[in-house]
Each structure stands twice: as C-alpha cells, then as structure tokens.
Image (cartoon, rainbow, N blue to C red):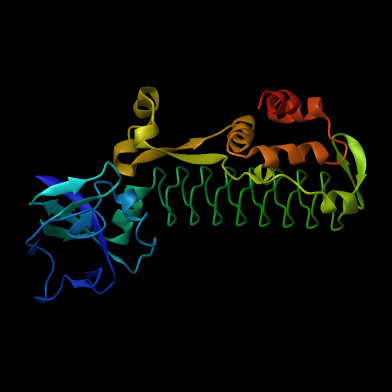
Length: 287
C-alpha cells in the first residue's frame, strides 16, 4: 500500500474537481481515463505532508487527507507526483497536520524545530514571528529573547536592531533607552547616523537565514542520522552559526552587490573579517 497526502479547498474541491460530488469522500475511489502528466492532468499529491504546502496555503480551513495510490504514477523528481487512481483513506485534523510538518511540538506555524511557535521557521520556542532563533519573540529574525521589534540580538526590545536590552528606541547597545542616538559606531569609529542612513548597503547584509530548511535531497548521511524525522518533514531545519549565515548570504550575492560594501563609511576589511569570517578584499580580488 502506497500512502500519500493531498490538500483540498474547504469544500473538498481541487483544481475545479469536486471530490464530494457523491456526498461523501472518506473511502471513495477516484479514477480518470487517459494520459496523466505532472502539473497538467491527473490527481496530484505529495509523499510528505510538508511538501503539500508548497502548493497550498498553510491554512487550517483547507481539507487535508491521507490517501492510498491505486493507479499509475508519474513524477519528475520533484516533491509531488500524479496518479490516475486513488482512494481517500481519512481526513486529517489540523492537529495531525501540525505534528507532521513540525519537528518541535505545540506549534501552529510551519516547519518549526522549536516548540510552541505560531510563526514559521523558528528554532527557538514560543515565537509568533518568523525566523527567530531566540525565544518568545513577536518580531522577526531575532536571536535574542522577548523582542517585539525585528532583528534584535539583545533581549526584551520593542525597537529594532538593538544589541542591548529593554530598549524602545532603535540601534541601541545600552539599556533602557527611548532615544535613537545621533552618532553611531561603524567599524569601531564614530559616524553620523544621517550619513549611515544615506549609505547604500549591500542587500546581502540583510540576511535572515540563521535557520535554513534543508530538503532531503540536499542532506548528508550524517544529517539524516542526526535528524530521524527528516522523512516525515521532507528535510530538517539547520541552525546556522552567525558566520555561516554571513557566508551563505555573501555566496548568493552578485559581484556588484558585494562591491557596495567597500563604499560603506569607515569600511575596514580586518574588522569585517573578524565579524563575518569573510576577507572581502581577497574575495573580490579573486573574482
């Protein structure tokens, strides 16, 4: 028996095909004549629940079912297949779905390895935002804890980009500040905030991939051994180190974007290398 998963709209339709036309769906067998082809004709499904939501919104109003494949099968090496005959075995509750798509427990979001997250792609716990490695954040891309702002490495900030704690202003490295400083340190030297704000920053500096979902086809044998749930999830959530995230973003940037870094105020190659592990002048010279 080959089992798989299929998502439908809340009225049990998919691509204008009404699966409830006979008044029932559970136990029903669906069949069509003629050739089947991926993305064009046939009944489409995924072998892993998490892959279904590459094609359907992660929405608890959708119907989700476990199905049995009974007919011919075609695939193109991707994350979905198509058949000309299948049977709906049972409807899955949203709780069942969440257990299948998340490594952690108690999540309402998608692809979380931490617990109790309502956002997506979190490795920390209790986050309602996305891409957090810290805990109890309502903002996004925080590595600290208890932040409602975005991009904080400190804790309990409501502003953005703070490395200190309890700040409601932005860009503070101290504590309990409500103002935004006029001058800031850039490459360990003072710089006008106005000059810094006008400077064109390379896009790769705004990386948010401290957590990266690695699909099964890209996993090493060691990663598979250390992440036994990868078959159910279709992969696992890899938590990058800070320098790994910088390097990943740098490697995916184009030459023009990388060179913008050299025009930043007070640019210092050695300081940047110490922070990120990237020797910019060497990398650009070799390109």
